[in-house]
Length: 335
Image (cartoon, rainbow, N blue to C red; front, side, top):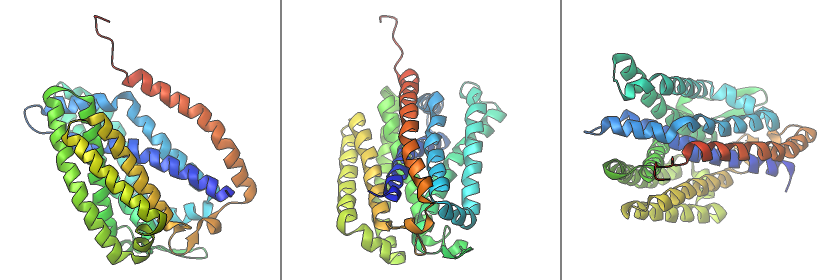
């Protein structure tokens, strides 16, 4: 493998980790916004407990991805910073507001005063808008609307992140986030609360299936080159595997086997994301910027490839310990 391919693998793993953990956390915020019924307060308590003190750690994968992009592919980083200035900053504002609201609205779980209700609303809205914009940004990179000619970058919003294909993909990512979160929450709750999240997993899973079919049609309609790559060769196989994993996870939800459903749903996300990446390869920004054209000098790439394993040797055990401490079920008095 070349240096560019190694860094591409690192970037995919970072993006995949964020797609599973970060997007699921966004989905938790979506269900917080739409908490309803006689157990509305308990639903929000369950979401807060599931996200707990570890949710902010999930953003480390997005930071890691952005650092790799800036260091290894500075031309792509510069082009995207200009082309996607508005949606990227909206995502950043959403993440910041979401983090602040998650803390400031905590007292509202037990005493729903006006400030707490406002912060709870901010938390839910920011959690909903952020994955929507991330999906729109992904579509913009692949749609061909961003054009690069030397130092000039052209990216009309209606042809990039506000195009019909981008809006559709954003809605799909939002729905997928809601499905992942509902499955995760069903696995971490009991009794009537589990039934609440079971119904949400069923509803969002059904919507995800419908939107998946719609997305394939829109891909063929608006990005035929991506459709060709995504439905043939290795990507076509991965698309089939992803569909099977989704069906498997949905059946497991119906059978209320939530732990296995969580694994298969996460696998679906990784497989489909890999298929998308391979369908777009070798372009970072279609059709004007490839990985090779955007890369930094080989000395920089070599340094990144050597340093990343050292960083992972520190980060991964730290994250494992974090989740082990805060996600472990507390011992009962009998224990």
